Picture 1 (tube, rainbow, N blue to C red):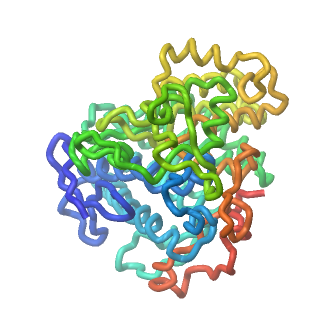
Picture 2: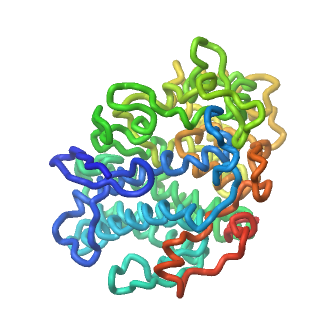
Length: 488
């Protein structure tokens, strides 16, 4: 456990909890929370949400072909390389997310009580973000009875699709609150510094994400009706990253969380465990993609050679010192912002919705904007010009819109390329929803339980020990067989 000091307009002391280097927790007591304010709780909660998107989803980066374990380690029987899960697998994530939801719940309640619609709306938006990730990992989860403190100590589980529908209603309410709140600079808003329109655009982008998750289960009419409401509102979707920066400092435990994951305060690279996955290296290399040298670095002693292993590879694995580490596009500095929802994802979501005929617009142009936004975020020199040269390459069906036979596969493939070491959770969701990109390799570990990437995380041990009366029973192998409601 560490103490982390984050500077907003005042100094706020927050305590680290959870897996590995956990992040920026106010530890609000939902039953007696009058010792703080929404203005102080919200930024700490936002920072914790942002910190989780890479560091706590390392297993997803492995499953999705982004990262692989260094060949210097005996890797064959790791739970994330074998796909095997016990009830221990999801313990940390379950605790971290619900702990943070308590903070957002406090902000929402106090915002309502104090007549501060901005804070109530922001909390509603972030609760939707957190609950969707819970549903997308576990399925049915405590929702209606959750976050009640000692009022409900054994919360029941709410149907996952019902939660999704409720999140859409809550996002509608959040949009109304934001549209009717005064626009003032808010230093505690470490996403948008009080820009209400950007919060509305974040809410709309989350709605679009929620709706497209359900693209394969026959809810087309519902999806189109909800998208029409967003169009009528007129505020649109994110055109800039939703990212957090609470004031990261060059000191251990106070740096950007992903930087801290890889470097110490002296600037020494300390991560020898996670390295480049060969599948990703080949994808960028085969498509003449300048993002290759920004997501990864050439091996030591070279400026052009990139090497990596497949997940679970033991036979012929390359030792860690001869494989590629993370590059300057994802490891910019100790003070870099931490992305929660990227502009690139927003454009790719819109491109998919237009391509399906559910939104009006130009799917090709939106697709190209998604590529350009990814280039811009990673720092490709002359990003717009470079992106244009990239996505107009002749003979590249994984890149060129006009030459791609399957436009949806193209959108998802390039979305996958943009989410690498930014927000890998979304790549796993797309893979489970659409089976894309189809070429993502399975683990080579000889100890895999089933040769398939897991479709869910099984319920954690903490629920079976503290809420056994309500936690749904799961059969052996549920992480491969028990699909979420939105999976075909």
